[in-house]
Image (cartoon, rainbow, N blue to C red; front, side):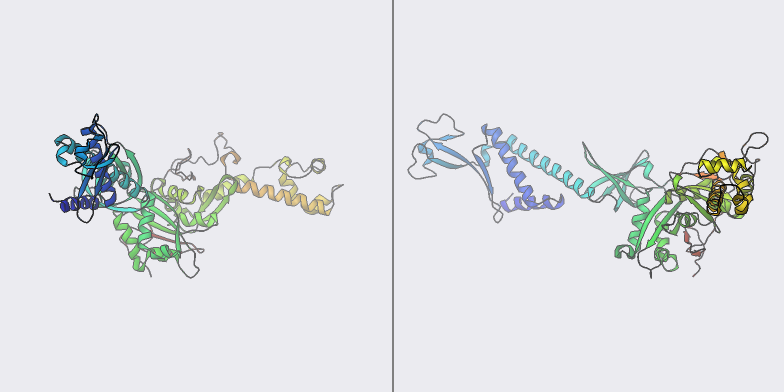
Length: 490
């Protein structure tokens, strides 16, 4: 192999391994120095030079001229030094050329091993660095091997794994098939960097939309939240930073083109696109689409929203096996308590009959005592007496009566709006009023994480509603469902 061929080989290694040519050359020099150390016992006085233009590789040893050579690796006689300098004298330093023949076969083999080992380590480090910066990005690879439940994917310069837990259950993968996924994590292992991919993570849907909707790169629209049950349904909350831009329309695209591209990538997974709102009541009502005509009442102290829906919309609000309300809770971050109009009316009437004791009023003990002396020992009696009845009590003027009456009404309203079972009166058989006979619908309480409360409803089968690319408006509510072969209404 000529000298120029050596340089070309090093350049090819650098290109294939995505390393700098300078690093590969320095690694070769390091390997040669290690070979010198094995051959001569030391490499402290040895240095390597390589000319890029000619490919000339030179190995030199610095030796000191002595009258008697005791250590040939570090010393040289005046007679031998005369080949390199004129009139050598003891103490002079001479640079001696070391021919490759001096190394021997084993030393050359060691140089090769060191070179490839260092290059491999540098390549692994570079791969780790590159993919660590791609966490959250979408990559494209080829299915290389299906091992048990995990799938090995061939990426540029490395292999990645698509674990079973990160796959879409309804999908079937074949060797040689192109697959897209989001980089979930990059871990260092003994065998090198391990790239973990995911097709089931919500970020995969988010990144797909960011690729399809150029307005996201311009900052005109943004994705506020994504909740997903991979392979089945996804809800996406979007928001427009520009009043003239319709966020939902931007994500849907002309005739649903944009959302359908994402749906096809997800193998037909249904997608609901809803307009985000800082108002939790409005946001929750939108998140429960395709159900319509919902009324929502937030309770910020408990991070909960009570939703009243028409009886015929209950199944849509809850969804099959509670999926719709579960995804809505994840999307909004609020616990959601759904009940029908009839359930709400029954509970309202039941709670209205419960007498609130005087202790519930936020007034002074002195005023409470005067009210009790007058026979007004419950909040309901105070409200019934009115301002005229209160002012007839000694020591209560018009202003005080107005404050007492206002406090009583607030206490009663708070009771009627609080739907916890502990506040409901017991049935004759000491069962809570919301225990319905089998076959009747129960309110379902869903936590943001998706878990259901123990008192779970007897579900109705969820009905699929909404059309492909459909946009609905109800009290400024915007939503879209995709993934079903229906038509978009312009």
